[in-house]
Amino acid sequence: MPTARLAEESDLVALLELFRASEVSAAAEPRERAEDIWRQTLSRDDLALFVSEEADKIVATCMLITAPNLLRAGRRHGFLENVVTHPHFQGLGHGRAVVTAALEEAWRKDCHHVLMQSGRRDPRVHRFYEGCGFVPGLRVGYVAHRPACPA
Image 1 (cartoon, rainbow, N blue to C red):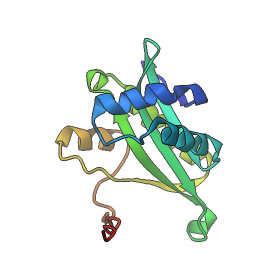
Image 2: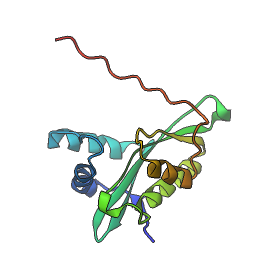
Image 3: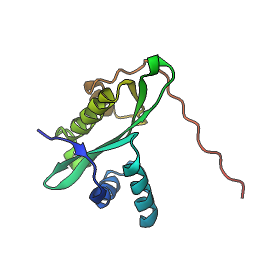
C-alpha cells in the first residue's frame, strides 16, 4: 500500500519530471525560477507538499494550503491544489495516499474544511475525489483569469 511523506528540498527535480510526464500544466521555467519557487514553498508554514514514491521515483503529489480565518469560530481554511499522479501509476493508491496525508494535516491544523476544484472532465477523476471524501456540489467554483497585458 503506497504511503506519502512531506516533500524535501532534494525532491524538486523529481517533481518537475512528474509534472512533465503528467502533462497537467506547464511547470515553472527556467530552472532558476522553479528553484526560487521551491525555496519559497518549503519555507512557508501554511504550505505542505506531499509526495508518494514507487521504486525511489516520485509518482504522485499534492499541495495543501492553509489560511487563517476570522469566521468559522477561527478555524482555518484548507485548499488542495496541484494533485498529480504519473499516468503509469494511476489507480495504484499513490494519489489517494497524498490526498489522505494532506487531509490529515488539514485536520491536525484545525481546518474547518478543505476545498478543492477540478477542471478535469474525466468521470474517473471525480469518482477518485469523491472516494477521498470530497462532496461535489456543495459550493460553486468561480475562476477569474489574469487580464491580458496590453502590448
